[in-house]
Length: 231
Image (tube, rainbow, N blue to C red; front, side, top):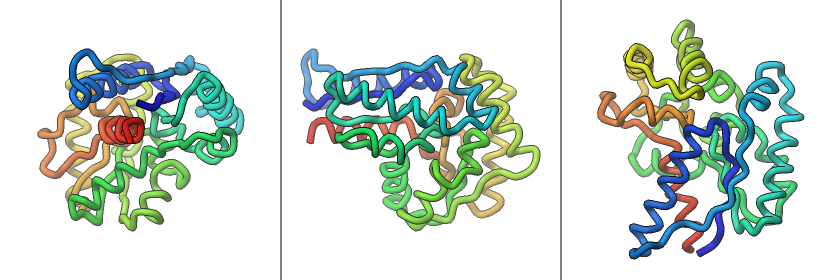
């Protein structure tokens, strides 16, 4: 088994889910008391969130690349980012390391295409919903998908819930209800499915809570990482 390097802590809530998914899948695949070989760098998210909010993306991206180099030096054979938003650092990370970087959009795009869908909704942080270099551009150009995002108050509320609640470990029923309405709005605009494009969102929402398929980036990414480690 290859060693997976994890860039985590953004937030630790979803990093813990990645850790659990990877180890449970390794035991299911290999049997006995098998578990995944992992190296984790866990950021202080308060520092990274402050850089995002003040527009210091270059510094945040540099920190991602430096941490990825540390994972490689620690023995990682491949690296994953346990966060959607900070995939904006993909170019910097890929330039800094020699081992593969498994982008979260690729197993996601493959799953959406395998389901036969072409028009897909995306909910996540404000940055993920508006920046081309995180998910939007890769899903459109590499996977041929038509991606739409919430508008107006729905856009603002999708972002607020993530930063004011989910990354603080608060998974509240009123916010769950609001997200259901946000997803329903995307479906009304023609979305055949919806991407949960924040790694904390699968903790808030279950797949059966929507009228269309929900694509959980965390689970798809972790499964692809274990496949790569066992290849």
